[in-house]
Image (cartoon, rainbow, N blue to C red; front, top):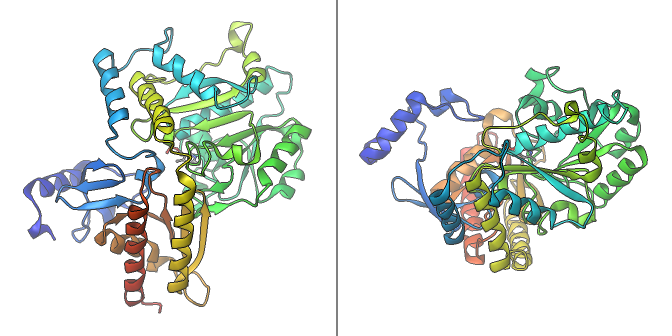
Length: 437
Ligand SMILES: *Cc1c(COP(=O)(O)O)cnc(C)c1O
């Protein structure tokens, strides 16, 4: 591989392998001679190009962030216009037009007097972190300081900062840091939650409709509404982590709208800026907000240097404009059904596919041995499939042996077919590559 490579590509890979440290990555393998990393240089719509000029469909929306495609002229122009005014100004002590407008636009998605305050931060983890700190401080300031714990769901994922990580239910990521964060009780289903003493809980945190990192696992229909009802009965705050599901991914703007649920805290990030810049928002109610008024020590002493970054706000506002201009949500159902049918065809053709899980435009394809048992972890079938699919022009990442397919919402039917056909080719090649069969 190295021999056929352009000089630039070789230089970038060498510099990366000498100095970069990648997220969730076994660096030894990343830097191994036989590893052939892609250097992505540009994108257009649903596609990405590498430094060798090869084109790939962006099959996981650049780690679940991109909404309207790459290099979208409206979003790019909005960021450029903002940069000509300022790249960043402080939100500590000042405001700016973009933040004021974006906060109003976000609140406008919810009925009056529900979610009406927006606290900006930088990424999904900090959006969750803010919700947790607000929820705990709220209890201190409303006479219930013993309600300082949280309930979260087994196998959930809410980010990697210490507070957010303490909610994490994925053992392989979070076991090492257990005991460093909030007191968290992990529950499987609602019945486990009902068994807890609500007087010890500030809030319950959930990825609504579908758990992402848990191999794309949807909740039973109606579960979210039941959870809301339990929260209403017990006074436990409902904290929805819509970092993955927000901004159209499930077919509606927000997943909670499928079950007419309004949370006490809503955490947004990945798709907020259309996937262009890192930015997050924690939304909450007047009731929560008002507990922070009054004497100085009641204020929420939390923030980041780049809070409400103007370029990020411009991107987010432009992304919301594009939802309107392109009727993104109205055009989704046809694509969602096409994806559903295409995945069913794949499943019928390949015994290696154990289960297809789909929620709107988010899909997980779980691979197992034809007898139904999981592949041994060391056979890394999911990774192999994604490497072969890459050679067929599709980029995505597996979660264990579940292949994630969640293209940008702007993808066309033809482009979806390209993705499905790349997976079809990959599955055809896999039996020969897996020693277990
Ligand atoms: C990605 C993700 C996070 C963390 O967001 P970052 O921007 O990576 O910090 C939190 N919750 C969910 C559901 C996510 O998918």
